[in-house]
Image (tube, rainbow, N blue to C red; front, top):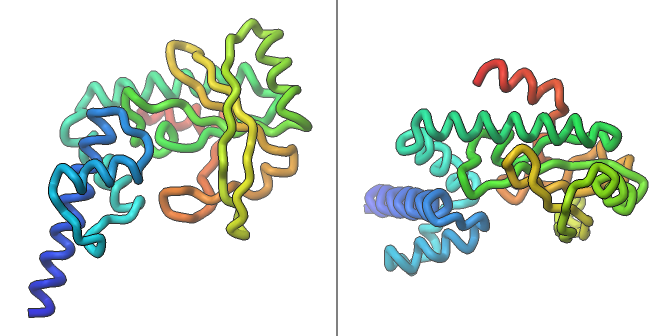
Length: 203
């Protein structure tokens, strides 16, 4: 009986993860928690013990894109990686690093290219963007450090090579330790422009 209940719980988690992935991809909901709640309401699942974690949802998103995205997903992912590389070259003085869905391959048409920049101040980045003639919109990004403390970081949203870019600015020494990923709680994976170029060679 216990094994059957465990199996039912695992199946429920899988169903919720799949529905959450569908909502994320098809409806442009980028917040995993919001998408999960929408999936629960739609499915009528009230047992919170059956809820999948963010890592399970990310896996489901990747599977959904692989099954339903096909070549169009791969083409779109490549275009976004090309845009990421171009933006990284443009902002090379801030030692840019690519993070997030475009890096791991779960980006869809509602995703942005996520970059981490490193500067003495966010004003330096704003000045550079202005000098380059880039129209940008500032934002704040709240991220957790390794010690579990959350901090606000300035960022800039702009478009480049027909793709939305979200560039979050860290102190210069922030390159040593990546913030925690909201997906799995581990340090975010960051890669430099050379690594993005290598990814494009294999796309």
